Amino acid sequence: MDKFGIPVAISFALFFTLSLASPIQIHAGFELLGTVEGKIFVSPIVGPGSDNLTYQDAISKCASAGYRIATLESQAQNDVVEANARRWSWIDGIDLQIPDVFFSINTGKNLTYTNWTVWGQRPVIGKDDYNCVRISCNQMDCGWWDVNCTDRYSVICELPVGI
Ligand SMILES: *[C@@H]1O[C@H](CO)[C@@H](O)[C@H](O)[C@H]1NC(C)=O
Ligand SMILES: *[C@@H]1O[C@H](CO)[C@@H](O)[C@H](O)[C@H]1NC(C)=O
Ligand SMILES: *[C@@H]1O[C@H](CO)[C@@H](O)[C@H](O)[C@H]1NC(C)=O
Ligand SMILES: *[C@@H]1O[C@H](CO)[C@@H](O)[C@H](O)[C@H]1NC(C)=O
Image 1 (tube, rainbow, N blue to C red):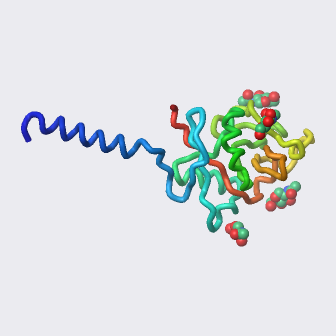
Image 2: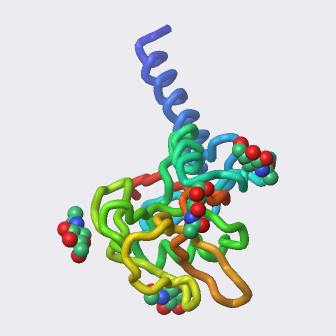
Image 3: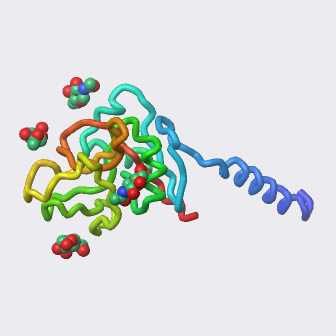
């Protein structure tokens, strides 16, 4: 190569790397729900076992593809996910430590945004078996429900991309 060859080759390599990498890459077996506020939200494509996940399974399912269970931190994030909540799905939030105080397993902090449904919001009754958060729609009533962590649903995963 002459003295221009190497920089040109590097420029071409960079160009192709960037132009091929720039579309959002979704892990095989997952589908894109939407992007907002620097997060990519995905869920498993419908298939064997895709809607048969306990909360523990859900965490593993996201992690297996390099994602984490989705922490919905704002109305904008909730809206993107809720538009796709036809499938009942786990999201981040458990209250195993203090009854009815839900915290993020991703950040360790109490959730500050929540969107309990009109019907799903349970009265504060102290310690119970409803320790994990599901997002789902029943008729027109979309939102969060605190349910048994051993129930089986799909999951919403996220990838923070820091846009
Ligand atoms: C869901 O998974 C459990 C545990 O692996 C299994 O026993 C059950 O048959 C599965 N249900 C469906 C509908 O696939
Ligand atoms: C979460 O909220 C509860 C109840 O308000 C409080 O006792 C606890 O200290 C909070 N945890 C954190 C990590 O802020
Ligand atoms: C929950 O989300 C709905 C939109 O689906 C919104 O209209 C409502 O204000 C939200 N509720 C809370 C408590 O944030
Ligand atoms: C929650 O699930 C566990 C394990 O499947 C079960 O033993 C328990 O009775 C359930 N609790 C409620 C309130 O359904």
